Length: 260
Image (cartoon, rainbow, N blue to C red; front, side, top):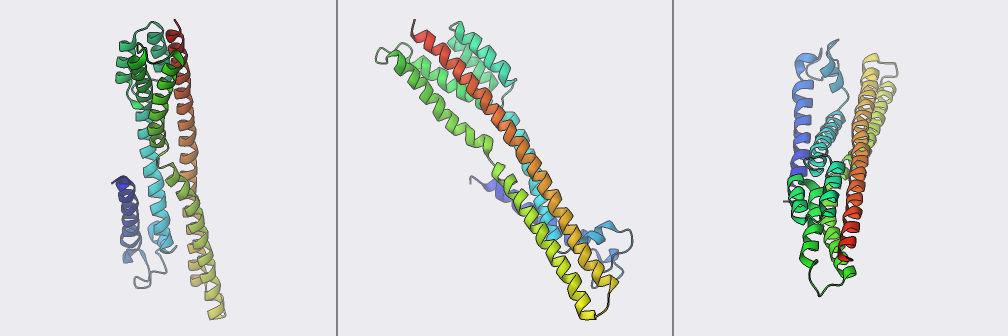
């Protein structure tokens, strides 16, 4: 199943977050009123955060999802760049092709691996197939190489951008859920004030704490996701630029070869 990993991560994040919220943060031992759990023991941070309400657990799951997919993108993009530095690889590959060493260039692509190695290898192999074929004119040979490269790029690019939309979504939803929790907390605080007719420090503090902890959780989740999204988007753009430079260099070399 194509998105099985994503589903597993999201479900696990939700399960773990709610289990931690109710099982650890909501431990009755952390409250002066174990039944209602409205008054956390002074200094018990977990119990205090628990008073923020169930939306805190949801925000915790967003934070876990953001961290998990940030790590997934980090390792996936590094793997896509290949074994050696992409710029160094393009330089070595251009040198081999300039010398007419097609087999050496293919071997270099195999050793490099990753997206850049796959793209270059597709173009080189297609050139090797049509290089001495009399049915293809010089421009047609270059067109065939470009077509092979474009097809491989269409396969590799989605892999580089995969799951970035999840980080973007988490950034947006975290902010909205945090704002919702803030609003609900303030509603609870003012409802308690209206019902009692007097200022109840306990009820007022419960509502305000719910508002503030949700605000903090929403901002934290959004910050993690936004920073990760911008970082990896820039990283992918730079990597694609290096691939494009390599494609241009290889195409120019092949053009000069077929015109000889």
